Length: 109
Length: 116
Image 1: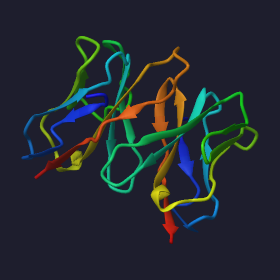
Image 2: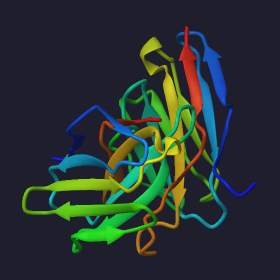
Image 3: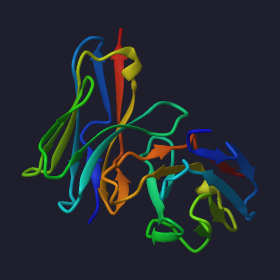
Image 4: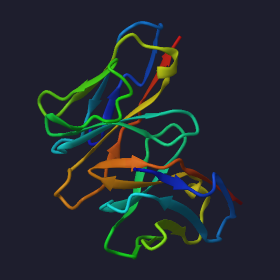
């Protein structure tokens, strides 16, 4: 079936440290995996995607890793800033876009 | 505007009433999604349009929910005989669609529906 979930509901990090947010998925047929950021009162905002035939993709301060063997996806944020505080969702595309439950990232000054 | 627009931003209705929620996608985006989000939860898929047709409506919870996109642009989510459990934020997103190679979906601010 289709299921995308996250390992931890809340992650607290010190400003300037690196953050790693994890996600497990179950649908091996997904074409793309995507990370979204949602701030309070706003709609989700696209961060980065990775195609299913890749294992790593880098963006500005973010890196997404895909391990298809264990069906695991992670988002790494370098030098975490207060503005990174939000809920982060992994999502997958298999025709439609399906979201997981979210991890709240709290950045301590 | 350049983004996805949803109206109204807030809607309070009485149990049993009918409501319509509107979504104006980004011009040129062929794919349009509707989601429902409850507090502390991820967006729950409802329906996905590719152009005018519903490509996947498997997320609609029951026959009280219906969505249309008659001209392949604006979409309306319709809820009949509203129940208190329908209270949530309803999100709309649009994207260039499958085949474009671009997965980025742009979300509106959502409509907060409260059924009293």
